[in-house]
Image (cartoon, rainbow, N blue to C red; front, top):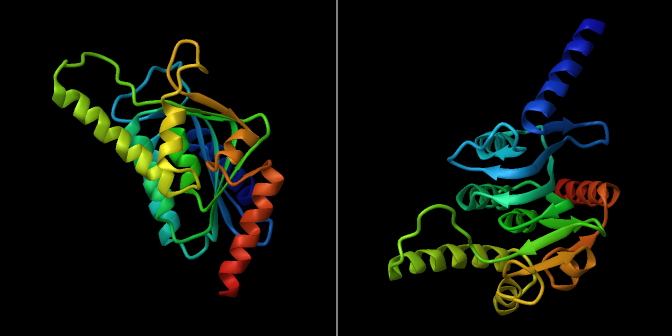
Length: 227
């Protein structure tokens, strides 16, 4: 029996190290923890020195969570600089479509495409020192200077804006104003929101830390059970 316990703990530690995920089941409910850390990696593999969240790890796990009879809720911890738009939106859409209670918690930051992921949960928190950077879509590499390119950029931007505004309490007009602000970031266009500012703008539901996030998730699970 002790050997089995040690083996289980070893497997748990390896899983956290490899995917940033673990199942918590000591609080009366089985909660699955997912971390979105560093840069969200899409179709291109980033360098070995970059800390990344691989969407091919997250998407299958979210499907497994939805199909699981044991897991009752999901907690998403975010400290991300953003990353691949398509990968980030895919993760956000998967989280938003889960039938189980979900809570997100922004820690260091949830920038760029991290914003849709943060608001995709049923309820969201941000720590008082947490930050969210809102800015227009960027693209690296060669860009063809034709109207079709800018139409494509606009289409991507509308997808992001539509998702965010559909999953939180900020209007599209206000979100676009924050996105196009020119007086906040010295070398960029956009806005940085800190803690309570993100709540005041209607993007995040509440300020709080892990205690508040876990409490809220347990409350949502109990409400789901009673229904």
